[in-house]
Image (cartoon, rainbow, N blue to C red; front, top):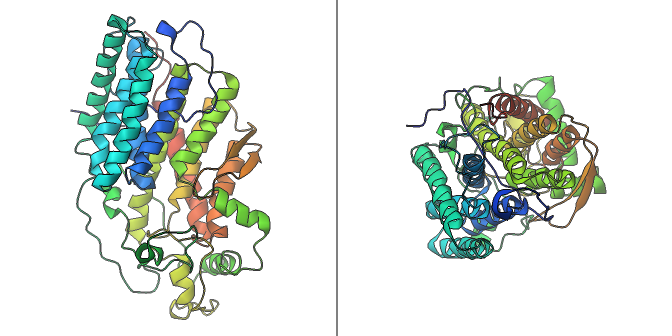
Length: 445
């Protein structure tokens, strides 16, 4: 039985790849792009299968952990997260990576979404699996690699079977000042939502049971629980309120064109965006599959834990979103806040309590891992965004700069208060620092 004791266990993640890297001396012709390719496939399949960002974070962490573990079962360079076996040097790495990734994705897909979405997701996975195996010559190394990959995936699936992710939700919104309740989207919804019933918003809270999901690297869900949002009558709350009201509204004249671009650029799910950052920087350095798998395992493990820790804190405090707060500003007991019952956020507000911004938690966690992995925060990179606002390119001088802009984006979008974003970064950094210090360390026999 897997126990998350807070000591070194074993974790992984692939990365989404645009750059194919040559890899010399790898058993049976493994190339780093196999790790990257399965990260791309994993995200594509998870989204096609109807998973939201929170669910995606768990799926990709599981998949990448399995990929990391199977590579280190073939040649142990880093400590495994979970799957331990003797070195299996005769196994074909391409087949092992594909089998580990494929089995996790196939097993998790039916857990979320609709049957028709499952069909699409499984078709994506099956196509990628067939293409990956076609590159590996038939024979015992290929068969051995498949068996090894399946074993690593089975170990992960067994460990996460009762992790709390499928616990029935038990949550009721409240109506007192400061408490979260369902809220509408801007009209029209931004980004667009085809289904008119969904476009209106007013959705129930998303996955409140995630506060009880077993973490990947933290000792408990509440290990780094935050002290809470500012009191409604405080000067900090007043500053947060006035800032988001002024700069985050649909019709804001104070938000600059650059700030609007930032809001759209970072609206993509955190697992996708930060995995892409990791991939881009790693590709520039020509890392091999073992290093890429370790990096992206750590990045995605801490992002998954960011959503778990974020859910613990946010459902503990249950703080309202700016949209609700601004429309009800005359009920909060703060004479300095002025209500605007027509105010709309610039972008759609996710159906979750405000504090903390888990988008900011994920960015803080990922940036902490990246800075330590590359031995410096001051690493310059350029990345282009994915859906729903794909094709925006921005450049950064450091990982922490990117994490801060990622957090700022939620204020510019009108969907979080500043305190939720800044405290979210701090929470994420604690998760990232701890995970890097305790997991997937270089192996010493």
